Amino acid sequence: MLKTAYIFHGHSRIWQSCYHNFFNNVFSILPGDIFIHTWDTVNAGFGSWWAHYRDLTEEEKIITNQTPDFKGICEAYKPKVLLIEEDKGKYLTNMSNHEKSSIGTQYMLKGSRKIFEIACKYDNYDVFFSTRMDLNYTTKLNISEYEDGVLMTPDIRLPYDVWMYGNKELMDIKTKYASYIEQYYFNKGINSLGGSGYETAFGSYIKDNNVTLRQSDLQWQSIRVFHENTIY
Image (cartoon, rainbow, N blue to C red; front, side, top):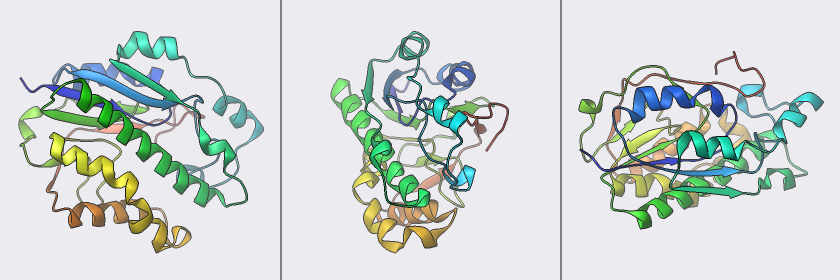
């Protein structure tokens, strides 16, 4: 059995609607230790690509600024480590929501790197599965598709890093992207990159680091916090 570490990152959002399927469809197939990095608010305070970078409504702001149910998260996931940090997005001013979203993405990537480093110090794991609490896994993980030395991704055409899994060396490269996002993404002109610009930039970084990607058959959905029944 592969010794596995799950490294969660990002806002907790609508985790209550997703954690059952995570355990039923992923964790039950590949058990492991759970490590979580998240923020002290439920959601980001500005609209990202899914909201067409608009300002949030007053009702949405109230939901966003709620304190997550950390007790419930601990009871559900039983993490080895739960690292909670202040959401710095509220200090981003005098810039467009597109720019705020991109900088917020860097914050998320830094959180992913932090929790990866914590997991590495905790034990010697064969596999690292990077994921988020707001992802709803709708099919069973097929662990036989995994091969050591490749990084599994939801989509190889536009390499999504919303969830990925691979060995320690590959996850080390993946999470180090937090330190290179300026070079590959920001310096290319955030406002000119469009909806798939982040994935294009990340793909260039992965290619430059000679990482082999393989597309997984695992199906998933991202459920948005303001409209629980809406899938993006």
